[in-house]
Length: 61
Picture: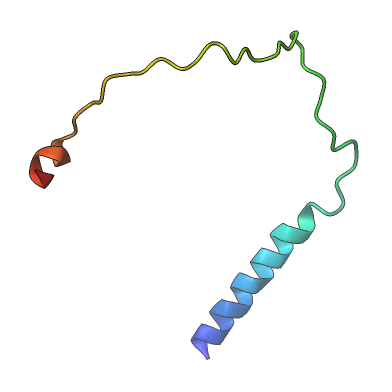
């Protein structure tokens, strides 16, 4: 009986949290940014960083 009560309480909590957002008012659209947005430049790529060795690497080898 104890596990059934735990399952019912967990289900009630999940439903309560899930249903709490149903009555949200206002726009769900993304707000306008306060700074100008620029397009990404595909010609600039991420720089390659050297591999950092971890302590577990010594154990694996």
